[in-house]
Image (cartoon, rainbow, N blue to C red):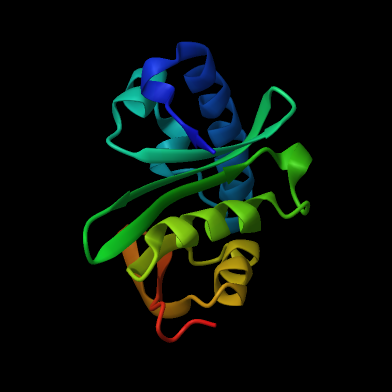
Length: 152
């Protein structure tokens, strides 16, 4: 379901909490805590020009995905799942929802190069490696792309 943290401060606070917890797990996996959304403020999160999808357990936000897009491409900017809800298929469901929104557009995503669980998720959904980039010294990301005509 679409969510709008820009207009809903309590939701934005919940989202920030889930985001920080999720990126803390990634920081532990990759051995580096310089992930920008890990340090993002509430105001920065609310001001980000992102379209958000959320997943709730009752009334509690347990996962979210942020994206942007144009006529040719959708960029998944963030995928965050509350660590207490890991391994329940929420990340997969959120990415599938983004793919449905993308329709026949190319979809790109990046994750920590050493974040093997995230990489396995994207690869299982038809994303293919598109290179690696050192964004700051010793912090590497792996980029992925999914071409809808090639993905099954």
